Length: 109
Image (cartoon, rainbow, N blue to C red):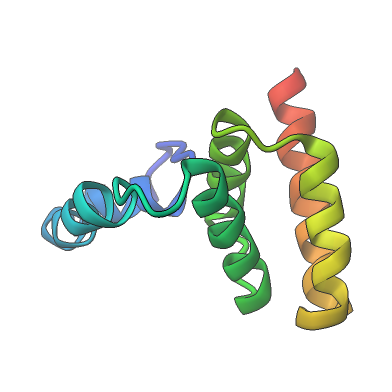
């Protein structure tokens, strides 16, 4: 098994299936994320909420950090996770909260 430490599942996908990554990332970044109808901050919040609601926490750390870069605060992220508990379920919110805590603990180290 490789000892490469990938920071997100997307990094591992790039290494194993570069063509898939190219097909996903080209329209995603050149069209979806650059569309001026939503701010990067709002796009990050929507993406984070979607990942939490769907239980896709593998990519959540990268998006939490990107959300902070795009203007979200830790307080807003915590409030979003709390709000999602009532719409996506408590297990999803608890998992997201643990993921956020681990992500921001590592980020502070």
